[in-house]
Image (cartoon, rainbow, N blue to C red; front, side, top):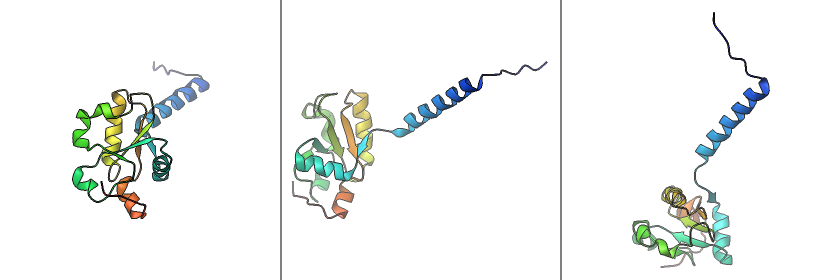
Length: 134
């Protein structure tokens, strides 16, 4: 004889919602801020913005006030970042691909205060926002 497991409907709904929430959290990825929020942070000096592009990319221009720490040097220069879980800071690259991966890695190291800038410097430049030579 085949036995069927019957769960009370509220339990079934609860399990379904928990599964959906866990799936959404897993797909959410590292935290980010908008390009506008990054620009405001730089203008107001409210957060440090770390530009992880490489020197040849910096040569095209950087956001005034951004701290330049190329991704290739980041491992050696962690002491220049705000302490883990303290002052919030932003990471920006050209398009957000590298910065999102870097923030994800930093967060596994305890830097829960790091977020990446959605759109990156390519979108910054496309909007005609001010840039300076490093």
